Amino acid sequence: MTAIVLEGEPVAAAIRASLIERVDALARRGHRPGLATVLVGDDGPSANYVAMKHRDCTEVGIESFDIHLPTTATATEVAAELGRLNADVAVDAYLLQHYTPFPAHLDFDALLLQIDPDKDADGLHPVNLGKLVIGSDGPLPCTPAGIVELLAYHQVPVEGRHVVIIGRGLTIGRPLANLLALKRPGLNAAVTVVHTGVERERFVALCRSADVLVAAAGAPGLVTPDLVQVGAAVVAAGVTVTVGDDGRRRVASDVAPEVAEVAGWLSPKVGGVGPMTRALLLRNCVDAAERAHR
Image 1: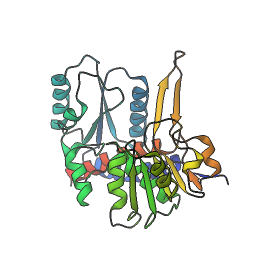
Image 2: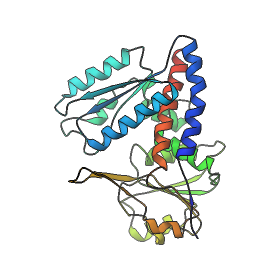
Image 3: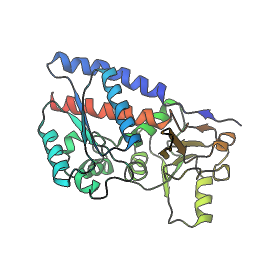
């Protein structure tokens, strides 16, 4: 068996195309949506990722604002910048770029609380995560929402199926579990979250029972063929990006390449989940602009 590739770019392109008309409609009413990014420090992969987000904005007609603060920026200075963005009517949504390791003298979670929930482009503010838990409308976390869109586009069955998520992180594992469990069309799955606290034999058994297996641990090569049920869908959501001494960027997936011989569907380490995350970021921005300019 060779897995069907869960390509993200065609899905992301369709989402971006659907946003152009909405952006133009807002512009005709006198407001062009604005998205800002705040990057603290000089993390190369994060800077590249931010640049891609701004290129996406240009494609759909969203105004973009690139704020880059030095690694030495204090918590007070970063919070002041977030406060300025909260008050800026030209900015409908923004994000504080998170990466590992985030500058050690800064508390990312504390800074996240400074973001106006209505302008939360990443959908990770506790207010918006709370809305997700109770099934209320609000900006959804971009990567989980992107994974749902990716599976739907490729017609991977989710409703009533067993989805196992490896990883319980804030950006993917926990919100994805809540999203997939909602009693809504295309969701309504039986969800299990496994992590480092699960004993190995049980961990293997749970993974092998999954109809859909989402790897979001940030552990290169963690998912091997013996963890995958034959014909299951496997989403490689966890990647590790490094930059070598030669300056070249290297991406390692949580999913071993050999899994393609067992799985029914498999997302690639590049061009799978990544484009979806960026597309949903744009959609959160346009949604925020429409809420603010009804």
